[in-house]
Image 1 (cartoon, one colour):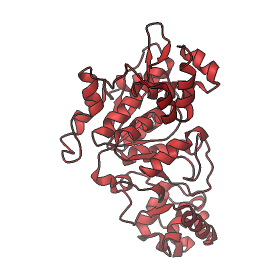
Image 2: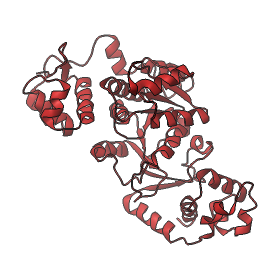
Image 3: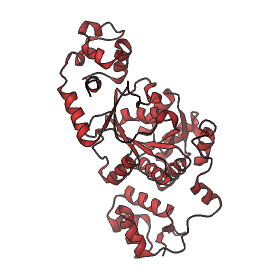
Image 4: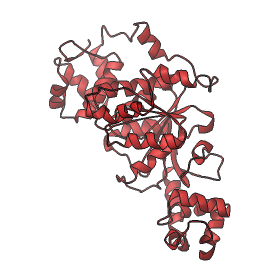
Length: 382
């Protein structure tokens, strides 16, 4: 812990960007050497001005000690750039985080096919279905799926990835001790237990809109490529795509409805040269040769779909189903047990947010518990 405090101090220096912290580390060789340097030594670095070094002149380590103590109390691992656990893939980007705070167990990133899935928070059932499918099938084939754990596409992709069986990573724009959005509490816990929650912000850092664009570079930086599923023209997913391209990562895009605002940004990416994908198999095909020992070519769920052998859905014992379900899925299932309903009717009947209902319906349908009829109404099978 003695040397970690210098890294945390450097990460928390007021007004110091990650890119400038990198210049300091390259010049002085270590965080401890940066700490012990004098003001005039900082000014020797090309491009540094007085405003860049003001925070460096504050040598108080109390905040760093407090952060390390809080990490120990909540079981949060502190990974610094000089540590063997820090992913080289991430370290090689232009502005890597000085410190990573991790809850759970971070997979061996540099050895694994890590793949990011991003998209809009306010999405359509089409987007939810394909994000869930991509997350599940990529995970089943051996990909480590990484998302931002936000509402909408992130949530759907994470739920799919958790079903797939390979550890999953969530990169957050707050401390790892905060759950944002709050309704994703169980998803956070599942990711932590079967993968890792990652942040460059110390515990106690509350969510703020200015922090989410910064975390996007970590999602792409950990990944060999990313998939964009539904993104309007003003979307954080487009920021992630831009950072991915800067970092030399592959960018795949799910084609969307050309008349839908929610797909305008993602469709534009295709027009500008991003690779369209029509199914997760398109992505798997690109990496199977690079990770032959890590990936399998076909996922079980994809095989079932291709053979028309979806999970059996002709009968579901209602009592047993409701005992197995929890949260939003259980509430939606209980509502559908009374009568078939349209999506809007389910939202009204349950009082749940539209996004929560759409996600629950997708998961119930993928599990073979519900079916959507030609009338558009969902029915509980059983």
